[in-house]
Length: 508
Image (tube, rainbow, N blue to C red; front, side, top):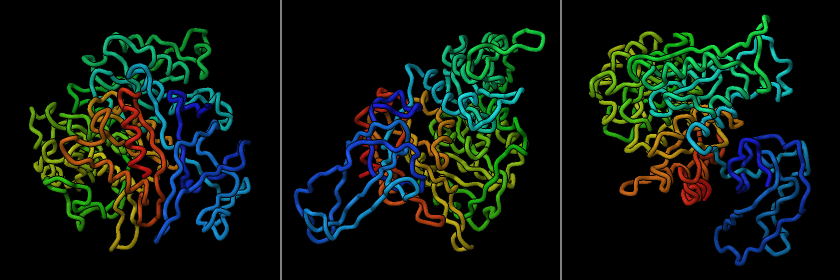
């Protein structure tokens, strides 16, 4: 079965009827059987029943799929009379959409997965006629970090978003062949190395500085007017520890590079399931867009991984605080984080995680700096990822009685990665920006086989039912259901059983 180019890693696709999100009819119209017919064995009694069609395979190369023809439902007899007819005769008509339930991105190793994601984000204009002629000084950026730790890649998400790039990974002392190939095939000219020499060696940097820049199709290297090869330009961004590296990445573009936002309706504990201080009261929250940053702990990676999509898509610097800068004190902001917030002239902070990783003392410190604080936190990291996703999706916009309470993302897809190991989640921020109608949240499973803590509450299942079977945002503007899932990681990272569970949770 043929699939979209960005789904070659997963040979199996399943589809179901979806709402289409207003997408236009697909320009390529496939031929095939004109009637799909099945029997409902027994009639509904009382209220109308529901019939779900699943397991349908469609041999088309692009997504979403548009079905041309007539859909009849609500009939009272076998002849389908007295029913409702939904007709879609062809281009220009309101489409019936077959929405992909799931797809995957994964490589043989972590570096290969990151390289695949990079190839989705950093496309070569030579293969895109809509770009027009390639400028003579065409610049393509790459961001690369060590694959041996999580912190640098998460703070690098902001940098990658500003550069229109994605995060590649490599071993500390040997440059990844997958990363080098990804840069060659996309004509990268500038590489931003995030992390100091203990995690990304000087020898790696030296090799990058000696690596030629290739033409955008990767066919041959570029030469200067004098005939000598033009090599990659390397920008090394790092500090003495994880918090200092986050400071260097987060302040790289200065205050003018920071994204602004206002969501006064989100304040007051709307996205906090923990006993920690929820932050600034809603009556004191900014009601006009102000410069915003994210603060997450450096003691664990999960909360920052979920927030990396927000940092990437909203241009919010992601600062880290905890053991690296405060000697293990999670109740006090590190000096590097404080300096970063001040240098970027931050007025509003989204504090990721509960009081175990970000104590109430940090809330007090931030507010003492004149910064408004919104805590987003769950009972465990899966709950925190759903709290953040709800914030990203919500968008109630009205008068003073119904202020904005979210970011109004309206995605076709939700992204999933395993939550018990960092390799897949830390590089997913780039592809979170790709799915048609807007950014996609990153959600974390408990492990490769279960959605939630086996000894606790499953927070993902009710969240998925809410956005997949009801509507993702009942406010204004109105957002429809989310019909699609994308998994980062192979079947050892997200098992087939877990994929089936998540599919069912989303689609009922």
